[in-house]
Length: 150
Image 1 (cartoon, rainbow, N blue to C red):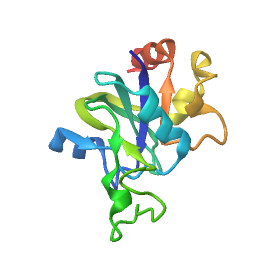
Image 2: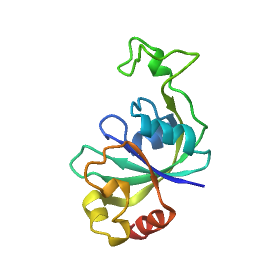
Image 3: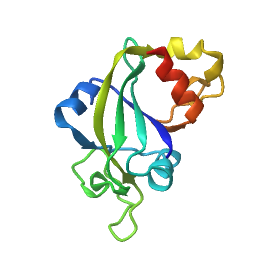
């Protein structure tokens, strides 16, 4: 089992939206490394930290779970979608997604600032400068250290 962190802007899709919908495709990822994590690394049942980004208090707000294997992101084929990719074809799709399902909200937001202050998380991709990936792996020891902060 692998552990993950997925970022979403709460005004676009929040943990409360996922709670209400129960399960949702994680569409619109247009970074090759993030795509590869979903396509090659994520497996059904893997736990996911749900992270609110680009907001007043960025941080981990909940836990989700990978609900499906990766499959082609349909938005890449839709010319009306902001995620349309004219270079992608149905026989050779460029972009993949997984669906995630709601598990629970955290008791509180564990803020980015708080995460950055934890020595046990110094090597975590999220806290390193310049890391803007929306999907990233979380080491098992990092997962445990973060949950202990709740």
